Length: 99
Image 1 (cartoon, rainbow, N blue to C red):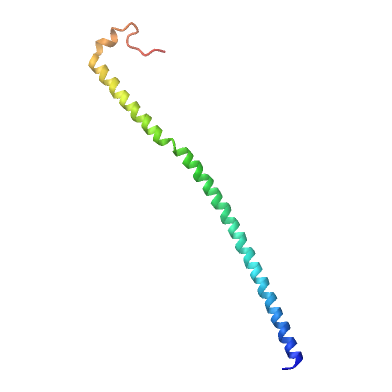
Image 2: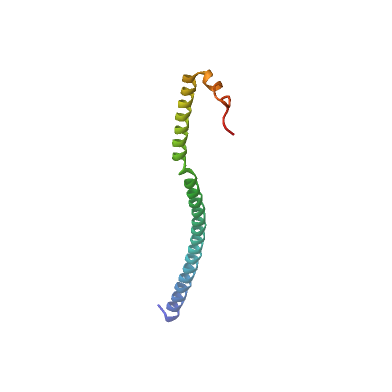
């Protein structure tokens, strides 16, 4: 192989390497941009999930409160039934709730 041919092969090899490096750089930039978009979307989903979790954490306490209120209501209705209608009219306020 002549010196000129070796030089030509060397220049072509370097040119191909530069082209490959540029293509790899462009592809990595594209992957980086997509990853940033995914990260932003995941951060939004995470924030919304945290807000939902914060809003639903009180549901257990609310269910317990509703259960207690239902128990109290049953007891009151039982007492009213046991006392009869005459007990309400014997009160000075006529059995009306206080205002």
